[in-house]
Length: 379
Image 1 (cartoon, helix red, strand yellow):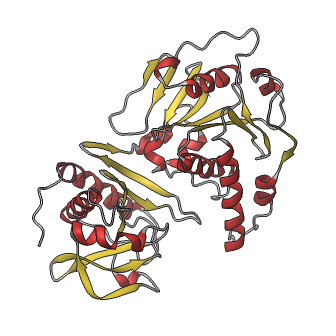
Image 2 (spheres, helix red, strand yellow; image 1 turned 120 degrees about the vertical axis):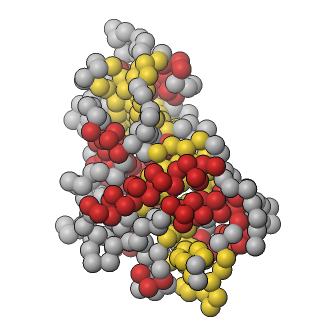
Image 3 (cartoon, one colour; image 1 turned 180 degrees about the vertical axis):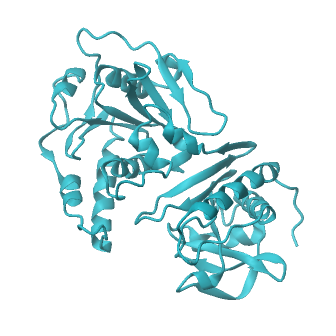
């Protein structure tokens, strides 16, 4: 048996994560077979093993692992090992390739008083405890949101000695954009293929390509956004490219989407998100028609220079800060803040190469641009 030093962040976060899942288990309507809630000891042990596994290399590869706490009988078609495997860093690193693809998890459950890996599962109930290794030293605790999507609700992010607990109350703040509410998992009034949820998928895809990029969401019935763009636009699209909007219109009335439809939707989202890697900004109407990409943002004639921006991150203990645009990052952040300042009906999504992701929106309450740092919700 491997003897390793305990990962201090695991001890710190375990009680809070347990309280989160116990609270939602008590108040959710998850049906007759709700997901089991791991106790603090199980949470701590899973985080410990996953953290040390993340620092290993197996044949030169960084392990990417997803663990789910549930018994095999909760999956209608589990892949069950003849002999359960020990929950240890060496074993997790070795078996990691089995669960690298999205939607596959190593099932973890007590066996003879010890946590063991019993096999793999692709059927995750609502509020099932899931622990994912993103990269070396970066772990995310999450659960399924119960909709037809691969996106989960993030509960906590652990990176080295830093622990970020997602603030559930952030969705109730004044001027909280619908996009942020959806990322927090509290958008229950719309189907998953609703307007803000499409933006969530675009945000995830933008962040995934790793090149950084900007996406401007503008009103479809208003051409004022053109006043904040340098002309001529090298990559203006005419007529508007309507692949994504057409696919969304074809969604079924009952909300049940076929695998073919889901594949087409993901391809359309990835195609638009890929355009944000081109220098400049992609412009998408709020009906999902692509209007341009590689567009250069310019301050609107007669508009003042944006001087202050409110910055928040939806994590416990986070406090709003008022900063100058130069403190936000590079040119993308500066130009996005200016665009939203000048076009207050628009929203700007900015992905950085260093994994940061910011949603810029106008705050009527503050009469100021508000920069919402949401990378902890997109992992």
